[in-house]
Image (tube, rainbow, N blue to C red; front, side, top):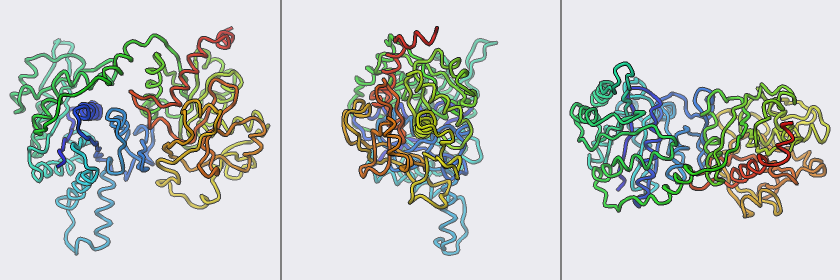
Length: 542
């Protein structure tokens, strides 16, 4: 039967519950267990798909097309398992389902209440993961204990412990232990109050994770153990590390997986962390450096591009390179002179996905600069569309080339909706969402990077390359290097004779892993490193 691990957080938000859950998932997987992860979010939005990246960070997309919280990206990167639509649940989705059932008369006229109807809906979503035949489900509760919106979720996981038996459930509570510089000491009282709040909801933590910048000391751990009613060995430090990929090893050293295995009575061998240790060693011994300009409209919140950022780092690991990201607000790129100044010290330019017309012209300026100066360029989703628009303007001479997303009545909309996409498309349901196949043309940069002709990648977009301009662009030198298997949809484009100038309509960042960098990111960073030492880069500094 499936064992359940519930991860909650207290004192303050942003403690790294997701990293803790993901690290534990990696440790348990390396002990031979099939692990799945799940995030329960208390906000009322039905899903993150229509939420602003500036507020919420990136929207992560699973293989089956679910738009989810960014923590699922951490889960997939650490555990290296594909998650699904059951891996993320919001309060909005819960209430929507309950109200829909009430409208259909499924409650037979009874009074609909938080308990049992809302909590039952939450539990049904948790239990649905049993269909995946997993040994252990790690379920993170979003928000902070004490928040009013989290209460139905905490009540639901309390009931799961009652229904499944305490030997089959483990509750982990992550708390902040603040350091007071004036008295030169760590303070345990906030953690104690947070645990008391959780216990007041009927949930007694089995393990307490202490988030701190440095070791809190034996006395603090003993105090928390005594006053929070947990065994001393179950009070575990989670310290701030130079790289988040060191967290599994640090938590393993501190005994986290051992106490979980004991609590859940799992008969498993010790964790084989050979591969993960190799990853961490590779991170620590990098000898090269390159700088990548990330050009976007949400750069004030780096989490808006979290998977892109991590994918660049992964590619750096495999290229023996530290990757420094230069965050560039696209609206600052007003002309080529601004580009020359801002990009003078960069080795590559990446334009990730996004929606809306703000900052578009600056992105086009970036793509032009990359094309005219042979700077490695990688366009993802919107970034691919930007590359096509810039090519149409700079090479074909269509000064008004654009996307029908931004200029619906434009004469030269080289990006547009396909014929079967016309009409009203709801904002909360994109036409292409999740994994789709792509056929790779031989002799292209795509073929060089992937080493195969058939690939699957994840999508999140409405607009496509406009085939009305397809032949004209090809005649002018644009290479269509990836298409849908029927050849109808353009998936990737590139410029020949370049180290790397490529646009992908899909989102490769969702499939990159620290132990297995995505082929396109790996190729992009390799090109950036070559550019860094090239004569071309030297001439740009003159």
